[in-house]
Length: 127
Image 1 (cartoon, one colour):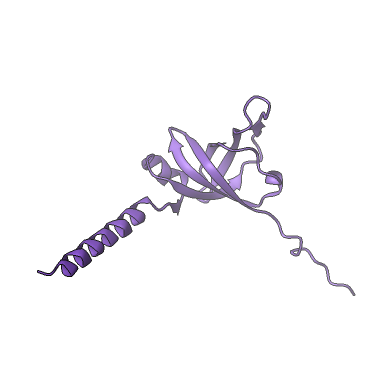
Image 2: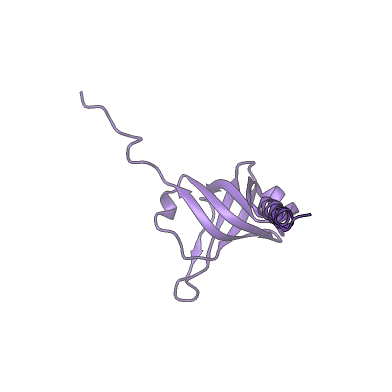
């Protein structure tokens, strides 16, 4: 067998390995129940902030810890600990996507995405 065929075969095998590894490590949109069942896997959980509970952010003690409660799309409520500072306009957000893993009953988030209300939603027509 020619050396070029061996090299090509090795490159194809490495490519297949990279693709399979990246498919296993990709995060998926889910809810708290599925994230709790697979605590070693990273998830994107979509939901809304539970406004009946207080938020906790003490930047003088730990600027990279923000705690709040969230209700996912299936209605389950969990405490979320974001390991970043409190996002600007967090109180105005309509929908939240948290990215992280479950740790017992607490969701440990490494990042957060927020959908804030658009200033163009309530544009009134001039008569």
